[in-house]
Amino acid sequence: MTDWRALCHDEPSDLHHEFLVEVAEVLETAGIGVGLRAHLELERFIANADGILSDENALDVGVLQRIIPKIRGFKRDLQPELEDLRKMLDSAGCETCVEVIDRWLDPRVADDEFLDGTDARIGLVGIRT
Image (tube, rainbow, N blue to C red; front, side, top):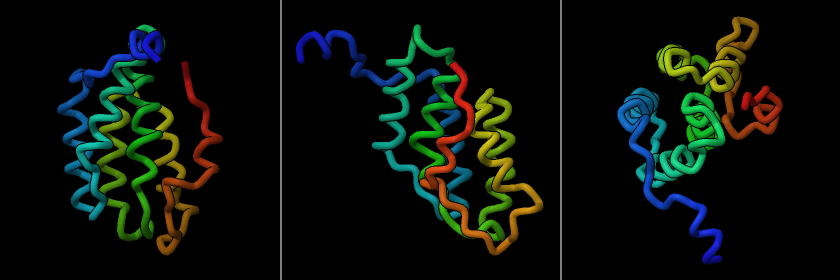
């Protein structure tokens, strides 16, 4: 355990802190909470991905793991926030998360479709390294 702890960063990275706060604010308007624990775990993930993944990919994978699963609800109720979130994630280089949101926003997905960020099919999107 000592060797493992020597490899891991306990301190969260503040590299994307403000961006993650803005993401939480957008989701809050849809009634979706992103708590402090999820925020800090995502920042620790980013800290530990340093040197393994690019900053953008670490953010993308982290959001896919910690934020996307919190998104649940009917498309008609989530669409405005999803569109805002998509723009934010696209500007940050979160290609995998954008791909998930694009699938949800596709016009072929009915407004009364229930979107579930824990859907196992989300894991089938391509993660870039």
